[in-house]
Image 1 (cartoon, rainbow, N blue to C red):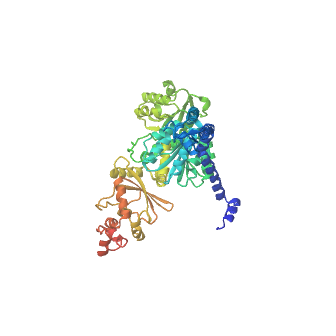
Image 2 (image 1 turned 90 degrees about the vertical axis):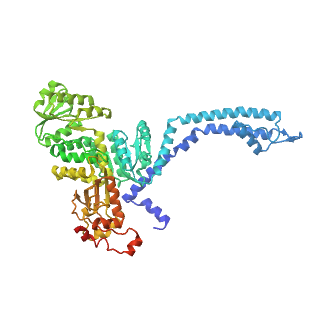
Image 3 (image 1 turned 180 degrees about the vertical axis):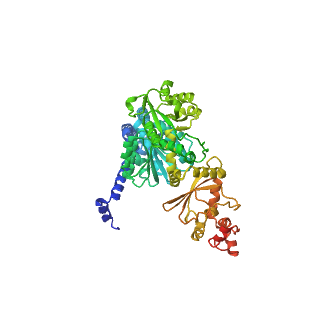
Amino acid sequence: MGNPLLTFWKNLFDTDDERRVGRATLRVAAASAAQASATVFLILRRMRTPLIVLIVIFAVSVLGLTLIPGQDLEGRPWRMGFFDAFYVMSYTASTIGFGEIPYPFTYNQRMWVTISIYLTVIGWAYAIGSLLALLQDRAFRSALALQHFSRKVSRLREPFVLVAGYGRTGELLGHSLDALGRRFVVLDRIGERIDALELGSYHADVPGLAADARDPGHLAVAGLDHPSCEAVVALTDEEETNLAIVMAAALLRPELPVIARVTSRTLAERMQAFGSPSLVNPFDRFGDHLRLVLRAPASYQLLTWLESGPGSPLPGRGAPPRDGRWIVCGYGRLGRELTADLRAEGLDVTVIESHPAEADDPDLLVGDGSDPWVLAQADLDRAVGLVAGTDNDTTNLSLVAAARRSKPSLFIAARQNRPASAPLFAAMELDALLVPSELIAHEVYAQLSTPLLWRFLREMPARGDEWAATLIDRLTALCGTRLQSLWKVRLNRQEAPTLEAWLASGSARLGDLLRNPENRDEPLHAVPLLVLRSSEATLAPDDDFVLAAGDELLLAGRPGARRALGTILFVESVLEYVISGRRMPSSWIWRKLAPTPAVGADAARGRRA
């Protein structure tokens, strides 16, 4: 629509939902921009009176010098012009003091300059005192930080993640994102956490603001309306705040993916009413993990290894009991989830709770679980597993110690609430440990690092424990016991230009592609975890899997294998050697002088080789 007037009226009266969302976002962005620019107005308002006093003193002093007559060198009357008077008062009021120009002053002029000096000293003292008070004012410092933060966010050009809440979970997630080279922006209402963010050892500058994330204006300043914002993560300790963040993101940027931390089922249902956010409940997820470790220890080992990110060592594979009775100490949010999950597996569960008013389970035993008499009443000798799931680390450690003392062979799971207690829980050598902040950080990392990894982790448990054990053996054989690198490759013209003809031939085998470009008889130190074609996912495909244009590959392996694969995807001569074994000139001139068949024509011969 070329007519500006028609465009204005169309935008004004258009009732399209997308148009309304855009206008709402613009209004929030405009309000947040005005809030961020409030520093200038605050300075002008607070410094208005001191500046007026200085200007009046300066003007009166200059005017007096022009009105008081002086004398030239021959004793004739002479009056100073406005420029000379302004110049004299400038270096006099600033205490520089060049001298009397252009002629020596008379006594009247010197008396006036003396009065002006004292007046300007008083004016400067008043102005400087007001400025120092302004610098210490909380409102001014907040406005200055908001403006500085807004400027840093607006200058971001690469994709970034908006993280609301920089507690232990946000810190772990931030370091994981930074290790991947991903940018992120932080909002947190506690200023000390933002100060810690500025002292963090990150590769890139991380913008952070101490503000209430429930305010849509603060979210807009943090980049909610920024075109480079690729996701919103709500990790605050207050679930009502997380709900407000989900609501704001769904209403103002409905196309953005949102991940939120939640433990209340009621609030989870309210969040689900706003689009389709990804909700992470640490207690529910730990229950799922406990069920998985009971059914398939190798699958649980693979899941925790990949969720921990690059650089993580291979965790141990336990041998949990599959049958028997369990004791759950603490019937709060975690205890309820675990009790339901264990009973869903067909296991008997006895609950120990010191506050019976908070529990409604028929198999409830009232008392302190760390008391040997209470454990005896729970028939600990016939139990196969115990969960210390209270919200107090001291209580949980006491429960673990008492259970270990009574029955050393017991499978023990515990909950760690505070990061400072980590060494104590590590010394206990537990079979399963729940650290809610770490579990949430790993879960969010798996979703943000690449959607393919999230898809793999969701579908992997259904493949069985033997399949997972075989995949772990492949990974450790090629990459060692420490997870090296995870990356994604899309087989298209932009990311794999040399494969276009080969993929079109219909004979592009995965095993032919993943060969060492230095010696094609050796495989690359990389394992394909998943191939996504349209919406169909193939987990851990074998070497005979035939690739097609548009496929997305998730691979795990050494960084050297990632670089080698990048060379294969972009250098045609390297691809020719990998699939056919024939050395092809890399120079364009030599390829013209010694023409060779196209890569696609050699596909069949490469497969036979």
